[in-house]
Length: 183
Image (cartoon, helix red, strand yellow):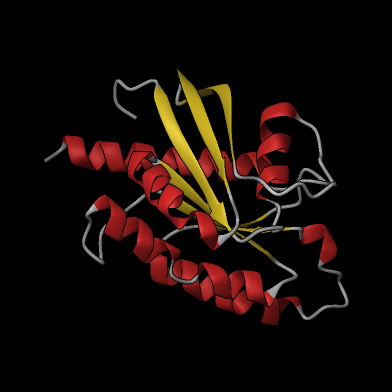
């Protein structure tokens, strides 16, 4: 990740999909099950990645489109992005379909540009074994393939995939920085 010790993660997605629960579980180790709409919250966590200390600055954003001007500012300053949807909500998935394009536009990158991001399906604990999971996951996996990014299922309640999401994002930033340094 180069000489930079600080890395800003922007968490984007619709309201109520579990963005705050994911971040709080990762940073504080606690599960928050009460929904309290966020306007913006900042978190910070010291981590070791690839043998080097890093400071993750995590911005938990509002889930509503009424703050879209704020989203552009956050995106402009973000180093990596978590695009979050609820595995049990088709609408929350539909809401995030154009977010990568928005990130590329705000960052001034071409439509085929690379930006470190992870597509995150939350609330895996609410998708029962009886549900047709293959049908639920087909579209997100196809979108992740189209975006050339990982898709990770998480459950903040059961602590499934929470740390993986942030480690994967750090890996992508490291790959980006290595490829840029070779130019």
